[in-house]
Image 1 (tube, helix red, strand yellow):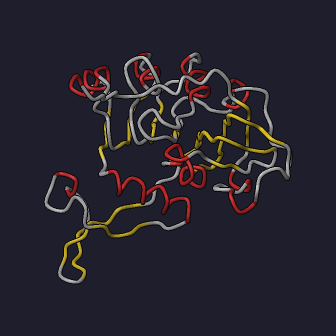
Image 2 (cartoon, helix red, strand yellow):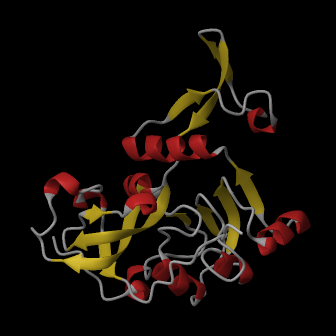
Length: 230
């Protein structure tokens, strides 16, 4: 039952080139910084990355884009990354842009074993191209498929040796649902606590979904875009 590994390098050791990986977080909040840094220092390439965002030029998934380790991005928001834009426009990077709510539900469905569902978002736009369309209650819907991945890499505030996880506020976004949708889920946590210390009523991700866990370090927790008052 003890799933603790020493560090990020050991945690990602099974990941091979051309793997499909989910990476949790919202913008730069709650992203698995240590694991991304370890991937950027590896020789892994050809990755298909499923993430709400694509990081920024010198942080988060931007590090993997800079080294051309990502073959395809499946995401919903990529507006703060000029390298992403350059690779997209030059044809170097495949991109599947998905409405954010649809992306979240596709991941949740994949983790819950739901193969497909209908959603109204995207009807009448480029998002609908090539998709089955059906009418429900007088409104048109698109057929969308659940998403799973070879690996899901998530980041939590607290975790224990069994893999039970508690996320911190906004950092919960995408992490919890991705933890359920990976064939192998890797969790990095800010604080690794003894089994029994976490209140069962506060646990977001039960340890049954997690295969590896380690305590991270040196988190920058960078802000993606700073807006201040005059």
